[in-house]
Structure formats: structure tokens, C-alpha cells
Length: 89
Image 1 (cartoon, rainbow, N blue to C red):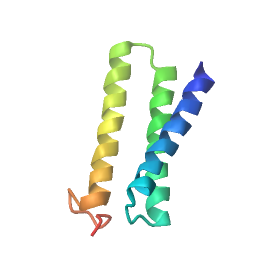
Image 2: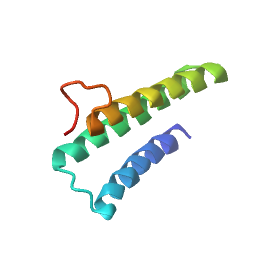
Image 3: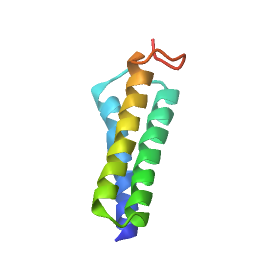
């Protein structure tokens, strides 16, 4: 079952990265690499939490925090929500 979840994570990342291609967004190669790294690291970190943390409440809280960080970083890179030097134009 554990390997099926890893394969599911890889398939989910690939499908999510196909959305900008199909929609015709003007993403560069760096954009795709950045999105892939963010999505894959988030998925693998949540997988690690699911394997190591035993209590359901802790699993949910930690994975929710990981997803929150993903969304904040994504928003910052996309539109400069916070105003760091990494913000998009």
C-alpha cells in the first residue's frame, strides 16, 4: 500500500503540472520545475507524516500545516502576497 501512495503522489504531481500546459499558461521551464519541486516535496512530506505519526489528530494537523505553507509559498511566488524579493511580477 505504501508504494501505491508514492505512485499516486507522482501521478497527482504530473496531472497537476499538465493543467498549465493544457490551459496554455505562459509558464517557463523554471516555473514548471519550481511547481514540481513544491508539489512533490509537499506530497512526500505528507507521506512521511502519514508513515511516522500514529495519532490521527496529529496527522491531520501536521498535513494541514504543510498544505498551508505550500499555499503561502505558492501565493508569494505567484503574486507577491507578502512582498519578499522572490515574488512574481
